[in-house]
Structure formats: C-alpha cells, structure tokens
Length: 167
Image (cartoon, rainbow, N blue to C red; front, side, top):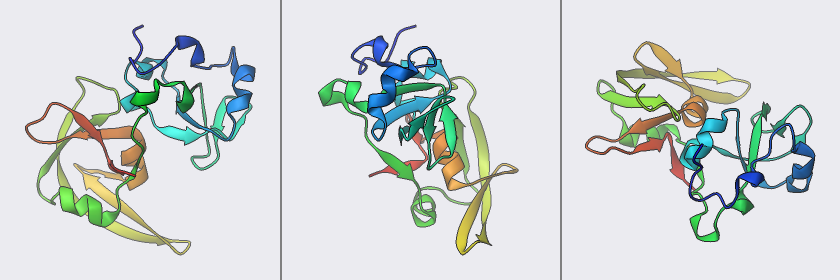
C-alpha cells in the first residue's frame, strides 16, 4: 500500500501489535481510524486526542476506540494537516441551500458519490442542547455525523472537502 507522502515512516502507524509503543503519545493529537486504507490520504482521517490505550486507541470526546493511530508529530514538519471542526448551523446555511443538490460521499469512498437534494433541517432540544438534523435525500444527519463520516464536493471542482471549517 502506498502511504500519504506526508507520513515520515510507516512504522509510526500503530495497531494492536505495537500499541504499547504508542503509550508515550497519550494526550497528543493523532490521526485515528478503523480503516488502514485511509492512510493513503490523511485528508480522509480525523485528528483526535489519544486519551488511553486499552482495546484500541481511545478518544474520550468521541467515546470511541480506533484500530490504527498515527501521532501528528510523525508528519513531515512542513506538511502538518489543517485542523477542522464541524459546521455550525449558520456556517452550513451560508454554503448550502435547501432545495439544491449536494454531491457527497463517505470519507475515502472514491466512486461512491451521492448527489442528493438538501431537503431541510430540524432542531431538537435534548438536555439543554440543541441538536440539528440536516436532511439530505430522505436521511437525517447531525453536523458531527457529516463531519466525522462524510465529505462534499464543491461545484466545478474535483476535490472533496470536509463538512467543517478550518480552525
């Protein structure tokens, strides 16, 4: 497998066989995923803080274990990945219009693009928090779900972007 050119050395991608060696990176930002193939292009992997190592590489904020971990420090210095966060409702509305199509796909799934209409949204109150559901086609998505799992393509370009803004 050919790795993203920003990765200094493949030995810095940790998995279940060398997880103990990654303990020194607890508390640091790391690329974490369950799909080894995504290391072909780091733009398809989210960066999380490595909180602990048990049955995988754990991020407390996402409450999720991942199979693979690459500490950000092991990228070529001039090539560090931009950091993103999910859109807010206002930021999303500035880019996308109800009634217009959105071309999007699951992160890293080239050739499996969807071109569906943005049908609307709804806000829901839960535990003093507002959760917004974006309806693309007939499916509802939260901003976190879109950010973590999908990417979209702007008209007249070939590049896919994260559902989020650069921090």
